[in-house]
Length: 63
Ligand code: SF4
Image (tube, rainbow, N blue to C red; front, side, top):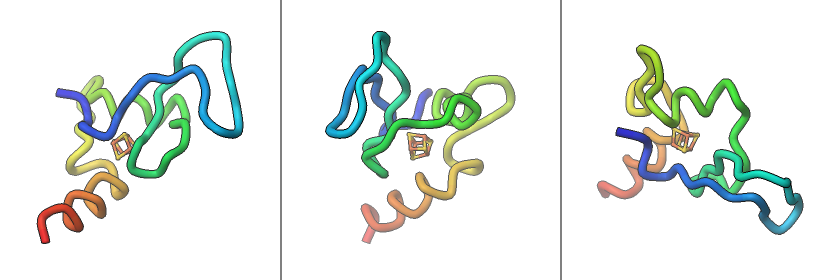
């Protein structure tokens, strides 16, 4: 299952694109293509063990 912080957008306050791109709501920024594989749990990747941003935000949410 993909990261709950992942969205697909074609624009934010600073940039716009002609197609939707991976967007991290935890950092309020677009995700680099290589990191998007982690966000989508592609291949052998998993957002929980492999993304420090996810872990930091999940810990804040738990407390
Ligand atoms: S960068 Fe990390 S926290 Fe943000 S959407 Fe991707 S996996 Fe989730």
